Image 1: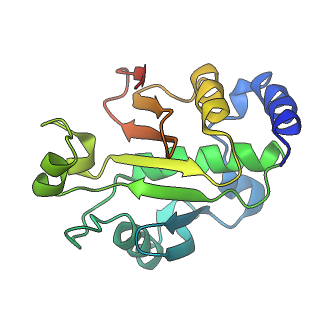
Image 2: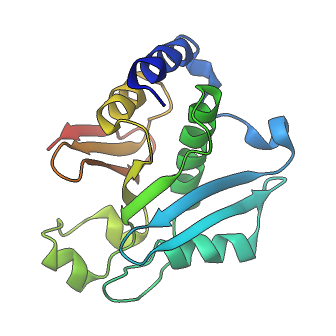
Length: 184
């Protein structure tokens, strides 16, 4: 999608912040779903993880497997609130004209050893399955980050933007009422 067109359509969405989090299940009847790609392993997944407000165990397990610590090849429980936040982002991007938004997962759950090796903090939300480092295919990360700061769905999250190569975002689901936003 053209960057100017994306900014224009996203600006339209910004005018209606009450749209997030979107009740995708009520809109589509299909449930909550995500498109995920893990560049390190080449895995791709398009999956429904909740149907009619209930966890779809098979879909959820697939998400947990993809969001594992790839280096240690160890999976863990991934926080459902984090997945619901990602689903809200996905739905808003669709409403803004982004076709089939796909989250490129750079890191999600980490073991203690991997977290130490990558320089993660001791109390990292990655250790608890409550964090993801990602970018969205064909969506400028800096624009997405600025938009996410303005939309009022980010209560109780940590959001960080890293402009290096590759450029990506950190998102975590922390205690509701405690929001931290940074650029690094």
